[in-house]
Image (cartoon, rainbow, N blue to C red; front, side):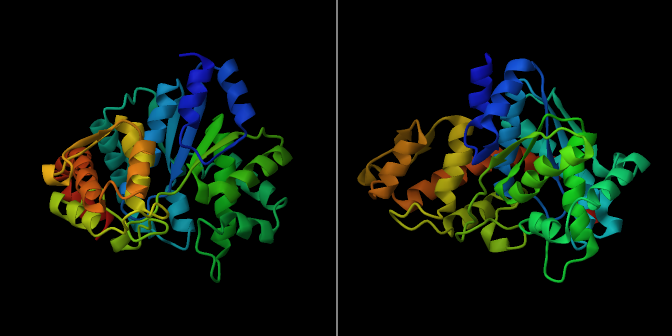
Length: 336
């Protein structure tokens, strides 16, 4: 795979790359660059997280070494979304369920490693750099950076520390690229600007769009109606998909279509719609644009689409559910 093919793989279905030119140069100069993503172990993972997990697969296929940071300290800094005494159990849950999804998707993870924030964020060198960056960053800029990620109503001091640590993680994990969702953009831009003030290099930032929830708008872990838990049973997955907002002919804020565009087609490259002969019979789509076009002109009915998406999603989640049948104790410890 040449550098252009590697670039196209990493760049597909992204919302923004800071900058594309820097990523191209990186791939031309390095055979095995290093990237990372940070996950704060707060709520249970939902179907929206299948998109970044699949994107990590793109990084791995493109020859990257990849570090999956379980940002356990960040989970507490963000207004104590995870109580201190639950951080260990939730960190284990996050690692195990992410590994389960990778296994189900049959992604080669030989270049993937997991690390916890507490493994390096409590060292004297790291804390010294947190203090150094805090003298460069205004409270206004820190709050602005954290505004899409943290709770900022009557913010705690920890909210100001959160983006500083995320910026420094790039340096202490010794990576070339940070990957995140578009909700991370303000922090990633801040990192590019402020790391050089500490004589550290800025990194490439790769961002993917956020999957709309089943009720329209952003999918949220705190809204049970808008998300499909990765451990929901088969009937619950079908029920949630069937009740999703997916108005006939309407493509905007359509979570079912978005799931097809950013996950199913990048993963499988096709989607089979099964339907009775009186409704046109089965149809195979080999790219998303064809499916979107048919949906927009009402050649594809929402219920037929939902049933196919539900079937595909349950096929992916079934091995993950089986894995966690043996981990009921862990789930109770992580989410009592």
